[in-house]
Length: 270
Length: 302
Image 1 (cartoon, rainbow over the protein chains, first blue to last red):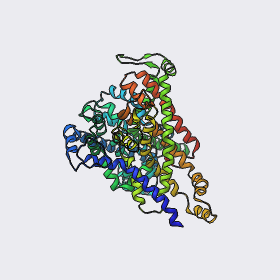
Image 2 (image 1 turned 120 degrees about the vertical axis):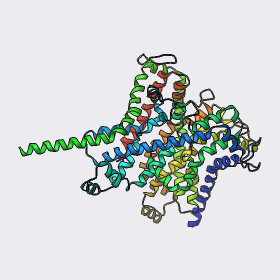
Image 3 (image 1 turned 90 degrees about the vertical axis):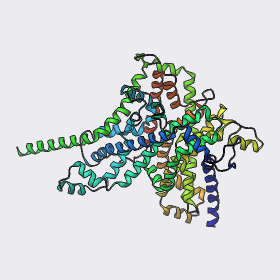
Image 4 (image 1 turned 135 degrees about the vertical axis):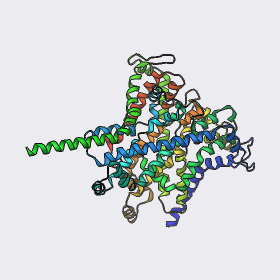
């Protein structure tokens, strides 16, 4: 009886999984198959690396990769510093104006950055930072998500630990480094996964800010390539370009699956 | 005497704590103020101004931008499209998300594989998904049309049809989003104690009854929380329009955020774009208000 009940959902589950995997399988298959005139679900034209080679040589994806890695890494590094400090204060200190600070930070949770492209681009022009990597990163240096996530974690760390550190003569920065950081590694990992995947995938803002290949990110590069005249009907090449930009994240996801899923649960609104 | 010095000492200690707290918060706060709070005020101001290409300075025009939008059929079309797209994405992705969560929550073989298969689109950039699905939807050569032809049906060329373009884009988005929403439902399901289910079983409740009478009501807080996530995500989605349709055919796929981008960065009408921004901000605010008025906020942040 019990077995019968499970066969149907299992079957549905695997049929759905098939539909979910079709685009990825097709993408990978086409990337590594010789270009053909007709598109087929299971490419059967033989294995080749030509598509990857062609795309890599004709579009500066190497440069885009470097830009993206730099932007993602620098953004997360700065976020770690600013959010750790703010989260520490909000988790451990009772201070005047707490509510206002909360409210201001909360606005960022409610309003996604992409909605504010018009005024933020004007601010960037005022600062003469359009078409720079710094301009792409700047709006994300203060992260409400990071602050709330770290604050929640810091609150679980007993005050006795930091009081002991004060008696030992530690100053605030030392307390953060010696007491709070070592006890919050999971939170930082979650924050890192969410931040990195957000900025790796971010498109609209980098598209608006950049207008030279010097500062372009992978997503912008892919969009421009996929829309370019040379890419029309060249699905093998577009697939290869798409493959190039998704491979690090998708690989990382398949390896650290549980961590990713847990981090995304904690990210909620992002 | 002793008491007043005590109070004074207490005050100056509090002052020190205040100062320390504000200094620690300042770096993050400055960036949030400059790039989240100030731009909100700035778009409110710009929406009251005329600012088009070639103009050095904005000219104050009061509510003229709003009035112009209100009498612009294209604006209402965009709002209808946005509402339609939200309906087509939020409800189906939540329904499928619950279904996927129920499957993944069962003790069946290959659960890990299924979870991976459903969730992986959530880590892929929308741009990558859109450029892959472009080939599914492509006229004549695309996978969808090929399947239709091989079944003896007419090719649909979904991206060029006024009636099919938004449903097609929604299907793609539901495919991406359902696995993401699944994980929230999954953690909601895992919070429901198994004793309730055992009791239901003893009472001889059927699976559908159990789902409707036990699972759904107990998932209610999750449902509300997820619906705001889903709605926000759907409203802020724009990447796929830029790469797949650019609003075509005849603005049948122009959504609100895309029209902000188009007015601001293609037509260079910043006054109009700011007005649209203010409307979008109002929608975003309303959506999140609903959530905070209705829940006890136990899910996060505090």
